[in-house]
Figure 1 (cartoon, rainbow, N blue to C red):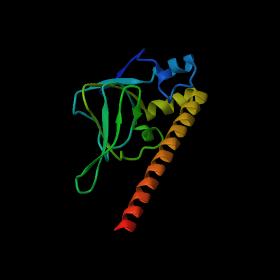
Figure 2 (cartoon, rainbow, N blue to C red):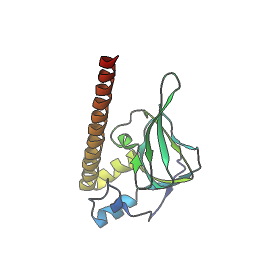
Figure 3 (cartoon, rainbow, N blue to C red):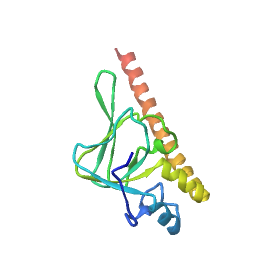
Figure 4 (cartoon, rainbow, N blue to C red):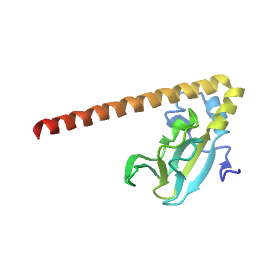
Length: 165
C-alpha cells in the first residue's frame, strides 16, 4: 500500500518541538530525512479510532482535534493539537489500534514519523533511536501523571457530591 505522504529534505525547526529539542543539529538533520508531510482539509480524518496506529504526527500549521467515540456514539474531546505540538505518539511504542480519531479542524499541514521509519533509523543509528525513545517515554510518562492527577480530582469531586446529596 502506498501512503499519500511526501518525503521532504527540509521541513522545519525541530529544536522547538519537545520530542526533538535535546537532539544535536546533526541528529535533527538525520531525523528530518525520515519525516513525511501531508496537508489535510478542514474536517478530514487524519486517523480513525480502531485502525492500526502507524506513527506520530506533528502539527506544522492549522490544528487537529483528537476525539474518542463512546459505545453510545457520544464524542469526547481528548485533546487539541496546535502548531509545534504532536499527537498519536503511542503508535511509535506499539502497534495497537488507535484509541481515538484525529480530525483536522482547518487546513492543516502535518509531519509524520512512522514507526517503521523510526525502527529503521534505530537500526542504522541506535544511539539516536534510543534518545528519541527515551524522550518519548518521558513525555508519555508526564502525560500519564497529569491524567492521573485529573482523574483523582474528578473522583474527589464525585465523592464530595455524593456526601452532599
